[in-house]
Image (cartoon, rainbow, N blue to C red; front, side):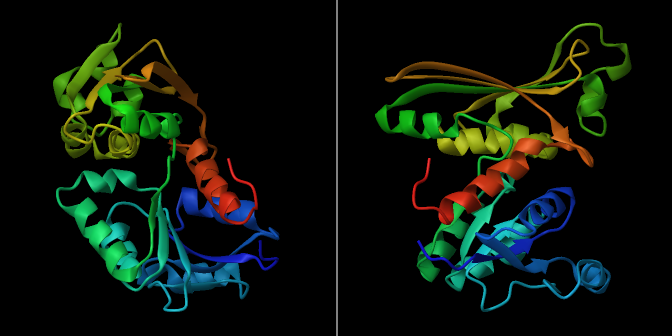
Length: 266
């Protein structure tokens, strides 16, 4: 492996981007050289971060690797053009791929640029097992997302049930992953990641539950196929400065960067 640190352009600087940036300060393997944000934020963020990194509103032409953590619109605004120019990209906003036609457009852009698009696992585990099982034949994949009632505020769940009056776990949606992503976009990333690793957005079933007996966000995956059967439950801790985001999302990005800079990967 090269002794030089890999250089990364970070697209987005919200809670996730900031956490990734802070954890890489002083790293000998990875250096954030550019941060891409909206034009309105460039000057203020540049003053905050100083001269060690360049803040801009577009992916620079000299970039070799983009790490996206900005939200769904960034895939069309920044990632797709970068792929077309031959820039390798890794994305955390996997839920955006539930939009009809977008996965094909991103794949075409990567093929045109002769590069790769990496979909990071984010807040969920077991993705490698699901992707491997798919090669042998999957028959069923179900994702269940369980949150306390307060975690569903600002969503269609408020119309379906009285969140303040719940005394037992209540299913607020049972549908395909594509429909779940459309109705509950804030929960789209995990469901879309599970789907794309396995049976696809239309064949993967999703259940969303408002559960007054829990205080954390719980992800459950069930998969069946020629390999056997898998059950996975994760109780993720949130980022300290963004309770709606799993800390594992940040760690999955750091793992990807680590694997690109080490001789042995797992």
